[in-house]
Length: 338
Ligand SMILES: NC(=O)c1ccc[n+]([C@@H]2O[C@H](COP(=O)([O-])OP(=O)(O)OC[C@H]3O[C@@H](n4cnc5c(N)ncnc54)[C@H](OP(=O)(O)O)[C@@H]3O)[C@@H](O)[C@H]2O)c1
Picture 1 (cartoon, helix red, strand yellow):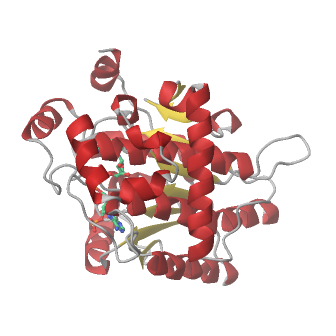
Picture 2: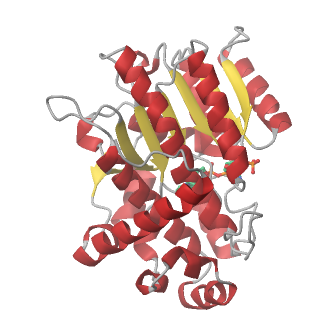
């Protein structure tokens, strides 16, 4: 109930322009929804460059025109559109290589917002062999974060006064899940099994699996925060945090066959994406007190027992070990230690 109250009555804030001015921000899934609105806010707050990571270049170009015209931006080089498909590890690797070339050619990366995500309610397996939601929301989010972290560290190295950020989109829906697979020997393999998918849909309903992937996004943020190197004072060189934007009126549910009740509730009480996306910009302006932490309604919040209980910590570490093992097979160069 208190969550609903906060959703309806919290007035969200944008950071001051000085937090974003002159920075290069990369946002995945930026052709629509929260990602596009965050990109629009970033441009309005005078980011030097906004990189839209999109799986359809034509949709990305449309979003670019839309953002430029609404912000009055006439500088053609400010909004870049790069192709990425989180259903494909090789697409991710090509995207990461493009980011590396960009930085080597004199560009910089200050902020990465891992926003792209799906709430799939139908069982599908990607060409890489993983359940679609698991690959997009979890494995690809982890892989891309690991590939881009060195570029954020490079920014810090070249400009010690800078404060690079990596922010991962989560939700509060993880508080409602049952997640029976957490006791399995191979959790991610179990989550890709079709029979297990059907069983968990019966047990936990349509939002169960989406909630599990969003829990894992929080796990990823915590684990990434643990591996970020620190300066002599013990401060992380890149701030990694997780953000929940609250229930927002995006296409997340309408593009999937989500239950009509959920869509009705969304229509009645959810935030606009313009409002919800302020949480993304806020998260990338926060300090070390948010490193490895969860921001809900723009404050560091308790993510609940699925994250903090002693059993949850064991599950988190196991999930992370599984993710790292899978990703090392995909990409031998992926760096999971500093
Ligand atoms: N809306 C909410 O209430 C809510 C609440 C909590 C958390 N979130 C999180 O917020 C993030 C953004 O969601 P949204 O609400 O803005 O949803 P959305 O409107 O459906 O936008 C999702 C974005 O992700 C992109 N995407 C999906 N699959 C992709 C793939 N395989 N490769 C590359 N991009 C892909 C989509 O691109 P296409 O247009 O090409 O499909 C789109 O740009 C998600 O991570 C979601 O879990 C949303």
